[in-house]
Length: 147
Image 1 (cartoon, rainbow, N blue to C red):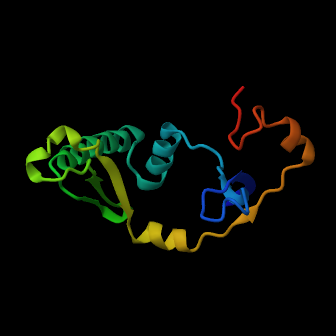
Image 2: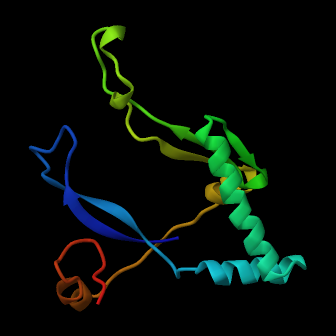
Image 3: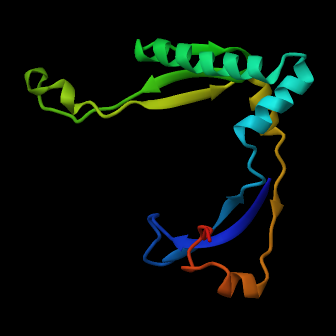
């Protein structure tokens, strides 16, 4: 995976002595659109792209249904999904109301194949030339500018 180094405000306990620090930031590779992903799965599975898309669409419907009932859902070797949420704290049980619960977040726990792939990831530093760093960043932040 490729990364670049960026300067950010230090939010740690040593921020008075070191106000900024250098951090690694991932440089994303090419974007794979859904249709291209579906075609690739179809080409290597013997199932047509319409069948692959139908299965993925239905998987989402079933996944959402089970998660809305508080269930953990195992999706084969991909991994499992579940909701997680928190709430505001109150001094006693009588003071608690359900509107104090924050919106649930989707938690994904990768399966073995993804965990192994993650552990075998290597990193490559990308060095931007001075011109790209000075003039190519738009607002000068660490986020790309879309033209």
